[in-house]
Image (cartoon, rainbow, N blue to C red; front, side, top):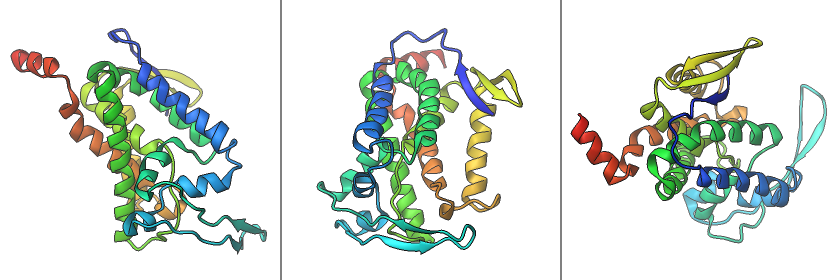
Length: 251
């Protein structure tokens, strides 16, 4: 069920911050990651759980591994030098992606759901809300990585955690908003709670291993879950005071 668009008829502001985030993600992937080929940059500025837990930069050598399925031998790049405090990789990793499909899927979801949250919160509040959700999502991944004894040297990256926070906020504010989705070769309109509710249930199912998914698959489900619930629980704290007061009068 791939979302294509939503109903923006009541949007009052232009989503300038949301578009800036989209442009930044694309520019980082093209200019700095060089369409995903610059592994030195990627492995230097992605979030590495061991670095966050220790507070120190870690540099490792490349590793040669053998894939028993394909029979091929491949080289996994080592962690490079991080020229900034390692804690800042919680921010830099939010604007990096593992490939075109990863980037395209994330930007599609951000484009559809982010503008409505920016309209509700305002430009500045949305800016900080997005970044906070992304940081909390990455910290959730680091915590679960430590808790379940995963490989602390595997870097994580992507805007998925921050966008998950946006989706959590969207579910709270616009649960019945009409979303157009592509499903089984047809375009249909469904309420947002079906689209986003089924999405978070899928993340929970994969994250707990119920559907066979876990961190070892290469998808940081914990970050998705952490970001989603961070957005769901914190977004009201970012509402403008005027919006809070008007809702109090209505209720």
